[in-house]
Image (cartoon, rainbow, N blue to C red):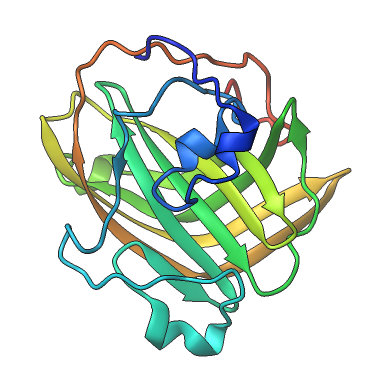
Length: 219
């Protein structure tokens, strides 16, 4: 787990590139923050076997064929880009960026965090039998950076004891938000495959012991 707390100069943070630096950009604006710099691995399609394509914040569904790559895909005017991954013995953290053609509606706030949810296919861990796989229904904790851009972190508890290296496959089919009992969602099929390496570095993660609005449980 993580030692230290990430404190960022807000002026310097404005100059940090977003994709590949979400943990650093968010600072304390998510409910399980820590000093992830130097630990989280940027998900780089150039290094991982794909073609790098720079995505703007105004990508439409009709541009999907020209912009999709290993870690960034567009469905119905919504681009979901995986940014970084960090994994210790019990949990994997995936930072991501959501960019939309139309403004992102308001959503539930928990402290400084804007809370969204993702639903989708089974979480396919390469070391877990099919019958033991869990369904993707997880909270995103992060921040609405502007009316069309959200950056957040997806936290997934690992089943069993993971090997040093494994592959995680999943497909997001719905991104949801809720405010004052009113729910909204973006639907699509954003499919990803990530190579994960367990980091045994001693890191202290801060948790917020609150129940989410949708009663998913402790965060």
